[in-house]
Structure formats: structure tokens, C-alpha cells
Image (cartoon, rainbow, N blue to C red; front, side):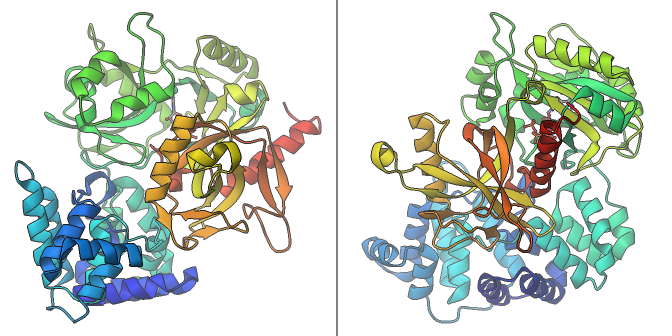
Amino acid sequence: MLFSALAEAFQAIEETTSRQAMTARLADLLRAGREDAGILPYLLQGQLGPPYAAPNLGLDERRVALALAAATDTPEEQIQRLYADYGDLGAVAEHLLPMHGQPVTVREVYERLREIAAVTGSGAYAEKIGRFADLLRGAGGPPARYLVRIALGRLRLGVGDATVIDALAAAIGDVTARPAIVHAYTRCSDLGLVAAAAFTGGRAALERIQPAPGRPVMPALAERLPTPAEIIRRLGRVIAEPKYDGLRLQAHRDGEQVWLFTRRLEDVTAAFPDVVRAVRQQVAARQVILDGEIVSYDPSSGRFLPFQETARRRRRHRVEEMEARYPLRYFAFDLLFLDGEDLLPLPQRERSRRLHEIVRAVSGGIIETTLQIETDDARALETFVAEMLRRGLEGVVVKRPDAAYHAGARQFNWVKLKREYVHALADTFDLVVVGYDRGRGKRAHLGIGSFLGAVYDPEHDRFRTVTRVGSGLTDEEWIELRERLEAARCTEKPNRVESRIIPDVWVEPRYVVEVVAGQISRSPLHTAGQTNGQPGYALRFPRASRFRFDRRPEDATTEREIVEMYRMQTSTAAGGPG
Ligand code: ATP
């Protein structure tokens, strides 16, 4: 496929507001570009690979402007002036390069962009700028516009994974293949791989996609229930484990090679050399995928530190210093793959047993397997919860002993019970920021007074608003948030957002913030949970509690959870369970 054809499709998608029409257009694109099916899903999301291996071009606005200046023989000042007029460097590129360029294929563009990303070492920037300028020189019209947007990480077509999956099912002419596509995707986290398999070998090829060291499995997620009694009533016999409040981390090993992935499927191996060493030292198997949580602690008191402190370890620079300052433990709670064998279908109890068998305790070792009890007695569970809270843990996670690992799904096979529910004070929600209001009065100097938070509806791949949040953060945190949001600013309401409120500034749904709220109420103002003629749901008394930038927007609290929590809240208020 020619890159100009892809640019044309980008433009059509951008102009489409109906999801159905967008899916149909995407299906046409995938069908027409089936030989490039392995890379189109990345490019549609402005990426150069799957989430865990998508290189960054390493060109910021200034450098893209320099490349554009070089490609068009235009003084840089003029580029900056045009940028101020258009507000989009992509539009400037198209303005300066209006004529059709030379025909170049999608694959060639993809490979050249990846080559630019791979340039490192001294003189790397000059070389990157030079190569990007060469690429632009051959482009013209919409291709130039989209090349620049991809380079800046601002393609923003509003095409989520769920939409690509629907389009792929339609493109292979078998809408009933959707579950098989999702199944394969949750095992490899790579839509390019899934799309290529779907076109070449249909369902059989999709079924052959198994977990493998080096590519993350989508993490299983927990539902919530309000009390131990309710949990036992619903699940019967359970395995209960402490809930650690750190960072979810999947550790992969293949021989001497180790990878670490976050819940957002990012590769963070370089940030945690201590965990890498421990995997080599403590795991008695050649190939494994472990699921677990890292928590840092204060070396002088041995006490666990709050999540924010652990999150500091995610950086890529001054790694050794951070390692000494924030030592950590890795609590492994599941085993997903072992020496060539996919363990996802095995019952929880069996996976836990094998996990305990392969993790060796060594002196100074930082990997531990989680403590567990197995019970069908609500009182025993209650005692366990109380003990965990007394130890300062966040709560417990209970698991159905006979259930398989449900990659990428929130199901009642895992249920969390947190401190907040036990004390019936409030609950926490992970909201996606979709807009913000510039501060007034006392807040004016911060440039942000509140943000508009939304929940995710995976079925329709859309974000629906649930509250405005204007408290809970320090001035420094508000400023940090505003700076991030500014970079994700959109001139119009983003495609996947549904809102009745119009904020001062719309932002691309990218950042997740945890919010504590006292109650959920029905509200005509918000779109979450809104159905024909019925009001939506809103969080009351919301307060931001922490940034959850380790989450993808699709990992946010879902619309369905809000509706269920509202139900849970009203049944408790009516003297029901709890
Ligand atoms: P929360 O903010 O409550 O942690 P979440 O959306 O991150 O919620 P959930 O799947 O709802 O994730 O809750 C389970 C989370 O708890 C896991 O993602 C993991 O990070 C953490 N966790 C801590 N200890 C355990 C454990 N023993 N088993 C499973 N998950 C655990």
C-alpha cells in the first residue's frame, strides 16, 4: 500500500464522527492493505510498534521544525511564524509541501521512521533531523501532514484498540471472529501480530498465538465486592492474598534474558536492575512469565512506602541511585508461562502451586511469593482482612481456586476488598482526564482550576464523563498536571469522548488520575451510564488522590463498574449486605 493511500484514509477517519462509519472505513483500509496488516494497527495509533516495543522517534517540536526548514529551504523563523498561525506543525508541512510527493510505500515509511528512532550516540540529533528531512522532501500534501504528526506523537485519530479489533473482524469477513481476535490479543498485546495472523491463517492462526517471554500478557483485573460475607456468598471457596499497593509488574525470563512490563504494557526493564538480577537468581526455570507487584520500602524501618514512592523508580536515569534509595520487594502472585507451557488455562490453585515450586528463597533475595489462605468461611476471611489492614496493607484480593487466568479481563474470578470499603468511607476511581477549566480567582496563577474526569465504556470504545474534580492536589501537582494536559490539548472534543459539559480546554484521553469520592448519584449533567432519556451518574465530593500515569486510559474505571457501585451503595444504604 502507498503511504498516500494511508494518509487519505487518516483524513477520512479524522472527518468521521460516527464509530460505525469509522469502523467500516478502517475495515476497508485493512482489507486494501492486507499485505501491511502487521504494521497498520500501529500506524493507526501513531505508533511504530506494539506498546511494549514502540520506539520513540526522539524528535521534539523544535527538531521537527528544523527538519521541515531543511526539507523546504525555508528559514526556521518562518516555520515558527506559520506554526503560530496554524497551531499545528503538520498543517505547516502541508502548506509548504502542497504538491504530490514521490510514491513511497507504507512499509518503507514505517521502516525509515524506525531507523530514525534507532539512531543514537553523539551527533544523533543532527542525523535524525537530516533523515527526517529526507523523508519529508519526498512527501507532499496530506502525507507530509501525517508524517509530522506521527513524528510528534500527535496523530490522534481517536482509534482505540476495540475499534481496530471490530474493524479487523469485519475486514477478514467474519464478525464472529471477534472473540478469537480478542483472545489472541490478550495473550500477546500486539495488534500487528494479531492482524497479520488473522489475514494469513484465520481463526486457526489466531488460536496458535500463545503467551511467550518477551511480550506481555494483558493483566487479569479484579472486580469488587463490599464485604467478606458477600464474597463468600458469591464465590464460595476462595484463596485470599494481601493486596500490595505498589506497581503491577510482569517479569519474563528466557534463559539469561529478562524483561519487565508494566500494567500499561510498557517495557521498564532498564529501570529495575535489582528485579532483573533477582529473576535470574531466584527463579528456578529457563522460561517464565511471573505476575506480581513491586513495592518499595524504607530500608531503615522496613516499612512499605506508599505507591507514589514506588512509582519514582520507573525513571530511566540515575537508576542506580534510585535503586539504593528505594529498595524494593517483588511479590509474585501468579505464574502464566513455564518452560514452553502456557499456564493460563490452569486453575488458580495449580498456578500458585507451581509458582511456589519455582521461586527460590535466597538470602538478600527480593522476590517473594504472596502469603495465601484458602477458606470458605466468611469469618475466617474477615479475620484475614483485618490482619492485613493492621499490617498496613491496602486490603486483600480473593481468587477463585479453580478459575483460569483471564488475561485482560475484569471478572469475579478475582475480587478486591479494600480498606475504603471496609470503613465504608469512600471509594477510589481511576478517571481519564478529558478536559480542564482554566483556574479563576486563587487558582488563576496555576492555569487550571478543575479537570473533567471520565470513565471508559469498552463496548463502544468511548469515554463518558462522570465528574469535575477541583481539589485534592498540591499546587505543584496541579501545575504538573496542567503541563501534561497542555501537551495533549485538542482543538475540538476528541472523537471518543462523550460529554455534555464543555470545558475550557479539551484534552486527548491519555492521563489517568485516581479520585476518591464519597458517593455516586444520578445526574443529567454527566454522560456516564446515560441511556435513552435516563440521567447519567456522577461522583459526589470528588477529590484527586494521586496520579495514575502508569495506567492506560482503557484501564480506567469502567462505566459498568460505576453503575454496579451505585447499585451496591443503594443496597447497602437500604440495609442490605454490609
Ligand atoms: P487498584 O487501584 O484497586 O489497585 P487496579 O485497577 O489497579 O485497582 P485491579 O485489578 O482492580 O487493579 O485490582 C487488583 C490490583 O491489585 C492489581 O492490578 C495489582 O496491581 C494489585 N495487587 C496487589 N496485590 C495483589 C495480589 N495478591 N493479587 C492480585 N493483584 C494484586
